[in-house]
Amino acid sequence: MNKVNDEIISRGKLAPRAASIAPLEGYRLDITFTNGERRIFDCNELLQYPAFAPIKDKAIFEQVTVEYGSPSWCDGDIDYCPDCLYIESTPVDTV
Image (tube, rainbow, N blue to C red; front, side, top):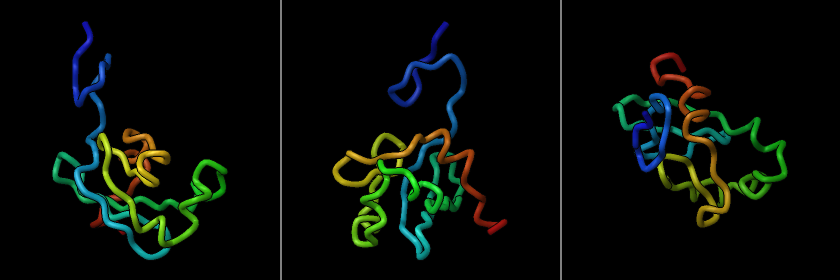
């Protein structure tokens, strides 16, 4: 049977979602997740993809917001998978 979690129907447990995000130097994000964990996500690898080209502009990168548990830019036109965000980020105490 499917479960409803964070407005998404899933067959399994979802990773924690971003609750707050702050941009850091070097195209990194300081993220607090819904489980209270704080992690750092490095966006540098994303910059090689055309879909993320606008966030190369530091002024745009710094306008990051949280939408549906994901980092979002340009009024939601650019975002990143919330599950990948958690899996690919690094706990603050190990940075």
